[in-house]
Amino acid sequence: GEVEEGDDAFQKKTKRPPPQVTGYKLYSKDVIGDVKEAHSEASSGDLVKIIKKMYADLDEAKGLEYEKKAGELRAKQAERRGEAGPTTNVGNEENEAPADENKEVEEEEAATVWRKEGSDYIGKIVRRYMFDSRNRLIDAADGVVIGWLSKVESDYNAEATGEPAPLWHMTYDDSRIGGEDLEEHEIQEAIELMDQELPEKVMDRYKKRLEMIEVQRSKKKEKEEKLKAREDAKMLKALQQLDQEAIREERKIKAKDRAEKEAANGEKEGKPEEKKAPELARDEGEELIVSGRWKGIRSSKGD
Image (cartoon, rainbow, N blue to C red; front, side, top):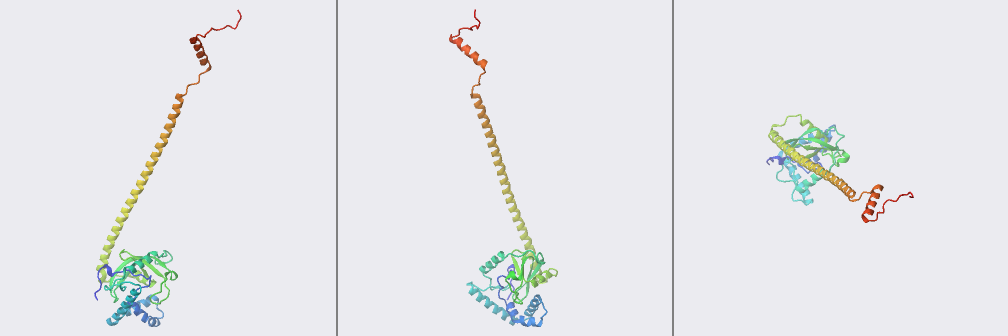
């Protein structure tokens, strides 16, 4: 079939929950025993590379046979989960992964707490190639490794060996792709690809992706600036309210002090002054004279 064009062809892959059934994985299960026996000293990463090459070299009829079987298994899995249709692998435009499954994967991804230290791969810039169902290269994208889980924590078995294996999580520069969980050999390969020249067949799509990433970053920066401006405006308004409250409180205190002073002055003006003894004596004499009761001053000496 035709290779799917556009960014929808590059879908993120996750190792949690277990990967979807593909023709390659069915083929890998069939040959892994013989490959391990023939290459007993090979690492897990080398075994995967060997099997991938073997699968790519299969004749077309045999490859389609594996893909057809994988499609049937995906359909049965979807039916057991009560979904409308089968899941899909990249490049198979006839089937699309159900929205509920994508949502479950995203929710689990978001809930995973990835270790931010303890691995030299954290912070590494990586590049991933994407292949269609016939293992044909169709796209490339870059990203960064942000965390990892040990084999005890990952709840994941390696594709090649079936044994518990650690996982590393990367996020793509293109936010539309999201993130991906990778085995160690995939991380190593992704790091090596950064130093290699991109194949001509994916160069145009890769350049378009870089342009889109710049647009995304520009929009993100604009959004962050608007958010910061709103936060600054809120802070300024809060400070102005505090200043206004402080001014009102100061005015209340001044008004209270002024009222107390005025009240004190009013009490002082309304109360008659206490007169001294000479003043009291003079007032009494004037009252006697006015009333006619003044008899004069008696001498204390006898005449």
